[in-house]
Each structure stands twice: as structure tokens, then as C-alpha cells.
Length: 287
Image (cartoon, rainbow, N blue to C red; front, side, top):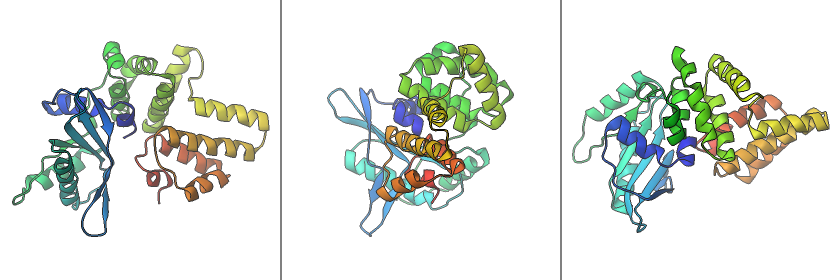
């Protein structure tokens, strides 16, 4: 979800390249409300929604994004609700793009929708890490930086991941400094420990210094200046809130106060890592 917020062309690119979909010509895309309200007092919340517009600001298609890490048979109904509500509201075709980290789980969801229905059926576009090609071409990484980041995370446990490091580095050089910071944090949070160690070693050797996020550098500097754990905790709490704000996540006042009051550095580290990829504040706090 973090990548689609930074690069709104990524969803359209995946639909075209992974699923061979024909996407209408569009000029730009904007996030859309992710809540779906029904007549009964209940709200369903999608992980992400994008609406694509032509040059005349007319919607031409929409996409609902979901990350599914576990089995939930009720998704057969709620996913239909997301798509039906958007198509009725905007009068455009809507694609449901679902990322499943586990291929067996993905097949199970595909079978769930293969069972059909009566009047209403749904064809979700479900993909796994195996469906995302490893980006090793430097030019492709410059053209599609977010794809290079997603590719690295998807292939984190593959032996050939290191061949993608030069392209991944160029992807970060192709975006703004703020985006590069966020992408680097996403990579650190998404790679297994062994792959993360190799990636950091590559960046240190290639760039000539420890390539760390601006937030973490500031935390280290503050720790040296204050020389106390509480000062470091305050700095890291601010880093968590800064990252959440940069990613557009809503932070209720009570949660903001909880983060600021926290002095447990391990807990703050966990929140910071989760904040890099979370789709909702609950994903950070793990309620």
C-alpha cells in the first residue's frame, strides 16, 4: 500500500503486465475513500482505492487494492461490495487487485471465486511474489522505481536477489529525496535479515557511506547530543509520527499521545518499521 501511495501508476502497470489487462488512457490518479457504507450500521474498509481520470477530469476506471495474508471466506462477499459500490458511484469499470504473499493462499482464494455465484460474480486479480519479475535492468528501474522496490521485497529470499541491487539503487536515485527515504525504509522492513544485511553492505560499499534514512540519521544524532535514553525515545517517537504524517495515515489523538509517551525503544523501533508499510494506523499499533 505504501508503494501505491507514492506511485499511483504502479497498480495500472501491474494490471497490464501481470494480467494483460487493457487499461483506459488516463492522465492521472487520485486516492479515493476506502470506506464502504451499507444500509445497516456497518462500514467495510478496503486497504486502498485509486480512481484514474482523463485530461478532462472524468473518471475512466478505478482500482481497489487489498493485501491478504490469511484465509477469510467472507472476502467473497465484502470484495464484491467494494467493487459494486465504486462502479455504482463512479459509473466506471473497477479492478480488484489482491496481493497474497503465499501462493497456496492465493490459489485458495482463486478457487473461492471460481465457485461462481448467482447473479453477481467477481474476478479478482490475485498475484503473489512469483508473479512479480525481478527487476535487474537499470533503465527499467529508473522508469518504474516503485516496481523495482516491490520486486526486491517479493524476491527477498531468492538467491539471485543481489543481481537486482544496482537497479534498486538507481531506482532510489530516480525519485525525490523524501521518496528515496521512504523506499529505503520499505526495503529494510520488507527484506529478510540476511538479504537486508547484504543490501546494506552493498549500499555502504557502493555509495561510500552508510545509506540510512533521514529519520534514523536524525535519531542517531539526537542520541549523541542528548546522551540519554529518554531523549532518544522522544526523537524516535517523533520519527514514527513524522513517517505516519508523510504517508497520509490518520493518527487519533489518543494514539499520538501513546506514541509520544512511550520510552520503550524496542517498541518504538517496531512501530517505525510497521509505519513504513502499514495501510492503516491499526496495522502499526497491532490492535
